[in-house]
Amino acid sequence: MKRSGLILLLLFMVTATNALAADPIRIGAIFSSTGPASFLGEPEKNSLEMAAQSINAAGGILGRQVEVIQYDDETEVNKCVLAVEKLARKDGVKAIIGPTTSGNTLAIVRNMTRYGIPLISCASSDKIVTPVNPWVFKVAPSDSFAIERLLDHILTTGAKRVAILTVSDGYGQSGRAGLQALIPKAGLELVADEVYGPKDTDMTAQLTKIRGLAADAVICWGTNPGPAVVARNHRQLGMTAPLYMSHGVASKKFIELAGDAAEGLILPAGRLIVAKQLEDGHAQKAMLLDYEAGYAKHYNAAVSTFGGHAWDAMLLLKAAIEKAGSDDPKAIRDALESITGMVGTAGIFNFSAQDHNGLDKTAFEVIRIEGGDWKIVR
Image 1 (cartoon, rainbow, N blue to C red):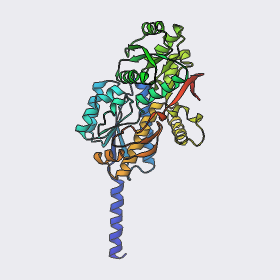
Image 2 (tube, one colour):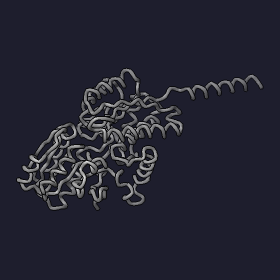
Image 3 (cartoon, rainbow, N blue to C red):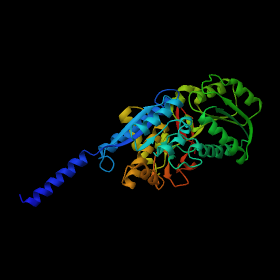
Image 4 (cartoon, helix red, strand yellow):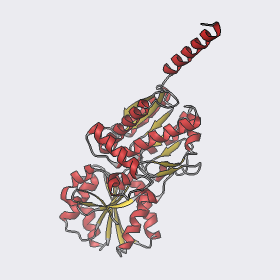
């Protein structure tokens, strides 16, 4: 072999070896895999692992494998704060997915500027991205969009007087503020504004007060287990005013906890849990069915809206890193702001410097629980 040919061969071999030995792209994650919000966090954990496996099997990102470093915050704020600090300071991740809950996310958003690492939250509070923090994004549609979609439906029923019952955590406080603002704007009267604690096991007192005020509709805003208690109490009291739920219960776990009391309840939710009911040709249908089939194969379980958030976050990071041509955190952040038209489980994302959620109220369907399952209200 000629000397020049040998040199080229050696250069090729060195390049190939370096490519194979390239450091992985390290992505951090914080989910509530255990604790009260585990019904949200566990499918998120599973979905992120499934997404990373799929990406790596297809060659990774920019020819590099993805390494996910994941912590369980156990649905506790302090553990979430410590986890994000460890990911940023010790683990050297390039971006972070999570946390699961609004309260835990809001506890760390201010830190992300100091760390200089993009965060893609799986929680829904408007406050996560309002006002915009340059380093903080989220994939769950904002609470205000869910409220708008639900109120649009309530108006079609002829209701005039609305009562709300919200949980006193980050998610509930965000929902309560949105309901207080948007109910009057919709031309409805807010006749009762009741609150319950995350660990309360009976809401009969609040519901009895609401019944005495002759509300035409009752909106409960919270995540399990509280809303299931509200549903059972509502039925036990024989209340005739229809009970509406938030997107925070869009999990089969809620139906399991509420039992027969879940029947007939209406809520706004993403299309993932009703993918088969979408019209053929819907922009999201094919990817939703693919995700659903993959999740069932990997975990032998039904999908939940919340697992889809982690899936979306990983796909967004992949798209941003590829668009940036780098895993530099600032380059990822800049690229995220320019992603438009990306189809995810939560909707079609259109990010910008002014919008770090990229969705609107059209991300939601109005869904009724029938026969222990979800059905789109047409």
